[in-house]
Length: 158
Image 1: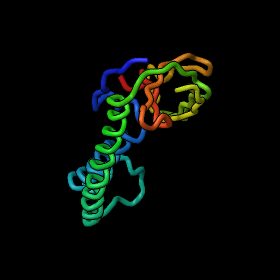
Image 2: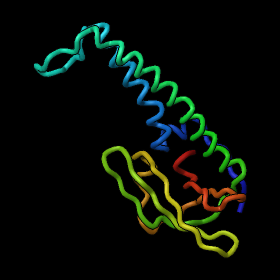
Image 3: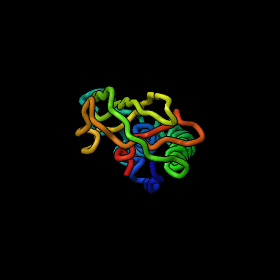
């Protein structure tokens, strides 16, 4: 068992589904707002009624809401994962289930700490590393010593 390096913010955004959503939602909403202001409608509306440029305040205010929600959510998620790496130790674990739907997925794993068995899981993005994981694979799990139920698969965030 050893302490491990802390993952970068970009590593967390790339590997963690919730962190990625907290970044992408504001970007998409602001992109829609800019498209409405610039084009007067959303491009590729495929013959449906274009959005009235007077509707752009909705996207403006919704964009502000997404930023107000997204920044704290991203900050919380990055801090919680980095705290696990700061306070955590590495133990061996095994992938018990992994599934993907489009670009998102879930990995579930089992590990032992202080002679007690634990099971955990995380919502993840389909990355090159995540796509290579298979049920039964032995992986390194980083667990929080103070709360051993908090854990992540190390290689998904580094």
